[in-house]
Image (cartoon, rainbow, N blue to C red; front, side):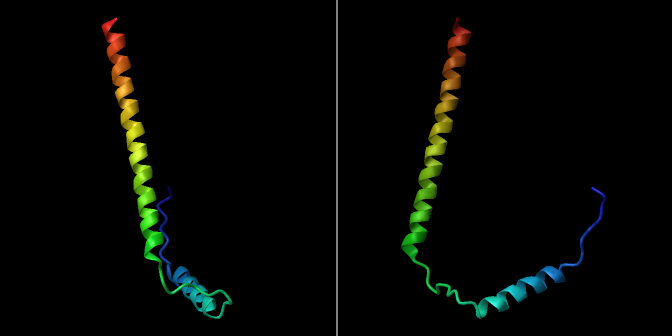
Length: 74
């Protein structure tokens, strides 16, 4: 890297504020409420996916240990 630093962040902030002001008059309405059931389902799915991934990982580790043990015993 050349060591050059970007110090002008006011442009990014100004663009973000302009975008927010333009959304106020947009025809799209945003929801003011969040359905807790949707959030809970997302968390449950994420935990289930994590559990499956960890099971697969530990299964592969166990398989490698068994294969290594078989090879060493020969």
